[in-house]
Image 1: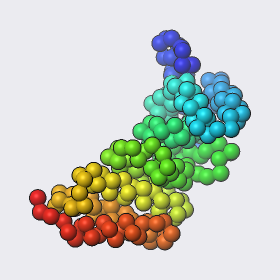
Image 2: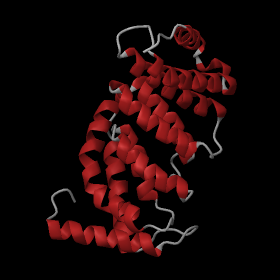
Image 3: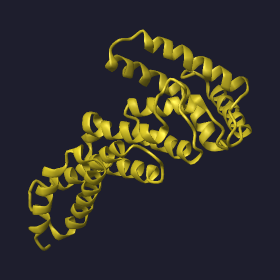
Image 4: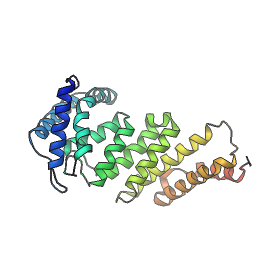
Length: 237
């Protein structure tokens, strides 16, 4: 679908919008356009299953994602919240591929409508969001830009705040967000905090305190102690 003409892309989006609009909350998406997308997703999964390298799988997913964007746009534009296994599977793919802003956009819709992941996934969507975004900061490219990471992680934190999820998963997300906030502070190149930086430092410390209360093994104690010392030594502007 990546090489479709503008007219074909427009038609693809209209079909997606129609299928999404016809699926009611609590129901499921159906219709020939949806069946075609399910078939395509199944074929793409078979291709991925034959690849052993995780890095290579991500590379292939990145080449495939553009082929699904018309469908995603249609769901976001006109969807009423019907279950859509294509949409929810692609939400995970976007996180895998580092397309974090798009993933958050999709996650808002999925969480708002209480969508579920396809059967092969063992976790629910809120838990996946907490786990995968925390991992994206700890082990992925989300940490490359701490300021962007704070925006993304704060959005995920707020999005999942009301959702039932394992304490350990939530603690790891809180830790990731706190560490991203500290990384922003560290970009100043000095341990000393200006008065204008203190609110963010205190917010980061509060997140770590909450993470520690949820999961004592989260691993934030030393960072908390160091940050508390920095806060107490805050210099005036």
